[in-house]
Amino acid sequence: MRITVIGCGYLGAVHAACMAKLGHQVVGIDVDHRKISALSEAKAPFFEPGLESLLREVQETGRLTFTTDMSAAAGNEVHFICVGTPQKKGENGADLSYVDASVEELLPYLSPGDFVVGKSTVPVGTAERLSNAVQAQEPAAHLVWNPEFLREGHAVADTLQPDRFVYGVSDGSEEHPAVAALDEVYAIPLSTGTPRLVTDHPTAELVKTAANSFLATKISFINAMAELCEAAGADVTRLADAIGMDDRIGRKFLNAGIGFGGGCLPKDIRAFMARAGELGADQALTFLREVDAINMRRRSRVVELARELCGGTLLGQRITVLGAAFKPESDDVRDSPALSIAAQLQLQGAVVTVTDPKALENAAKRFPELHYEGDVDAAISGSDALLLLTEWREYVELDPLTLIGSVGTARVLDGRNVLDAAKWRSAGWAYRGMGRP
Ligand code: UDX
Image (cartoon, rainbow, N blue to C red; front, side):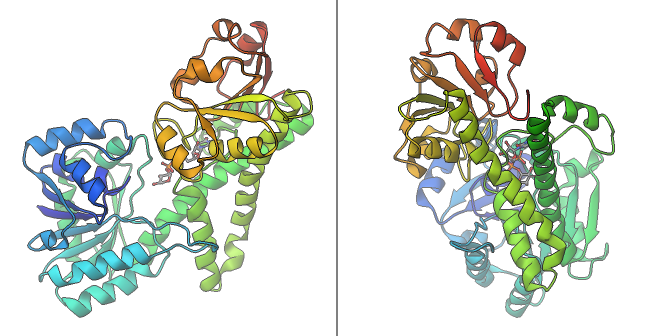
């Protein structure tokens, strides 16, 4: 099929490359010239495992091109909207200006029988509004909501082999023409048995925000248990192992630590609360305020633990923060708990050095006041305390016996509960975890 992908960020660039991989003829469109020229040379403008080799592979076939010119959408049959919906400044709601602008710009290029397919995470009700705009321009075009569930760091696999597809169509029926069109787009993953659900517009929009709210709640639940474990002298990692063996609960997303961050979960739960308020259903989501509060409390708890670990004061302590990205295998620092903790430590008088294998450039743009060091050995040398805040494999695999010779004082705070506490202690380190004795 001939496909347009509007927005070439973490979602759109991966989606465009994957659609070409599935055999379609794809053009990726973005207003950012820098992004487009990088992508045109098969260079990923951000770090995502497997993306660059996929870009090279599909660009060699001639099936994938990039441009800043919206008129390239003309003649295509399916137009995906993959632009960002960040949190509005000073408010909880989502900023829909990029979604609105991209649909508005696309309208003149629509032909009868075209499909506009929303993938961005939007407040419920957006699809109906955009559907009206599409039909006012071209009555024989259709708007579908087809939410994306990809995780950064696993985005290529999540797009090519997702857990499920959700198609939100205006009448919620299997007979809607968009269902056959999307079945053709996703023919390969569907042929391997990937389930797909057809719903109405609002249900499809809510599926995404409900899924992210559930994931956020699961993380905050285990972090609340970590607070209790700390108070009671229990171990939250063993507790998670034990409750996770009940397959109604499951062990995934039960890792207690410094809490969730990133460009999705924090802003999505806030936008969801804001939208529920507009709909007069705010009571249904007041629990998400608590989910958010538990999450934010983790960040101050780490600072307190670091102070305790450093003997009661942070003043002048040389602290090495291992990890700046909001999670491993990503260079994304949007709402990264690691960076927010590093900044708080520095404000309280610590001499902070941040290291990360991929995210330092983005981190320096967001927090220019912090000190960054790309070489992990140099970052650790002479340190008074190591704080493992993003669980990159190379940090998890650090050898406590080798390291002890290069630090000033052997103290480690394991913000993600990924280190072997007994091994670090027996090597001579003062070890603290999150919700572990
Ligand atoms: C999330 C959803 O998982 C994805 O389905 C959706 O499409 C977009 O939002 P992403 O933001 O890429 O994806 O990251 P995710 O893997 O969900 O992690 C989010 C945050 O939660 C990270 O900061 C991570 O470190 C943290 N986390 C995750 C925990 O603290 N504990 C866990 O057990 C799992």
